[in-house]
Length: 154
Image 1: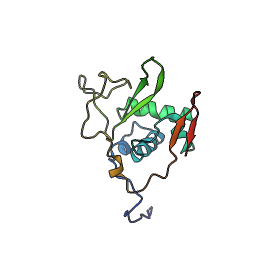
Image 2 (image 1 turned 120 degrees about the vertical axis):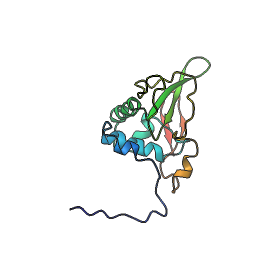
Image 3 (image 1 turned 30 degrees about the vertical axis):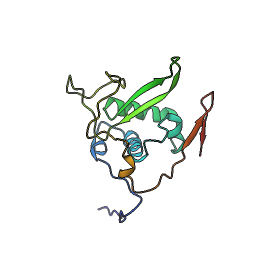
Image 4 (image 1 turned 135 degrees about the horizontal axis):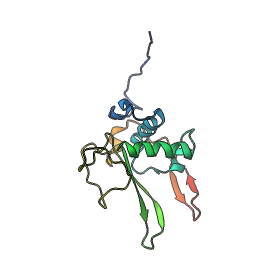
């Protein structure tokens, strides 16, 4: 028999759906990464470099977990470009429950949305993320990116 010691959750906790934690198609790494992503504020730098700064995982492991989350419909990534067509970053759209492909009824297998801006659903992790988190942001924030892509972390 096991014994679990729990803490009284008055502060320093995050509220999220259990859907991804019960999904047997996701690895523990993908479940942990999604839990972390749901905990972070929308203003945080969602990038391979940003995630590797606050975890033990390297960019390769994080990249494979992100691909898993995309395949299961928990994440959509879209590359952003400036007016000259240069890549300036990636937009992350994070879902607490996977989105379903409205045409086939299955989860999307591609991280590229069919429209320019996906429609918001009730289960979308929206910009009110700070309401779901009962602690201040203790993770470093990326304040600038230089010309070669290096991040400056606070």
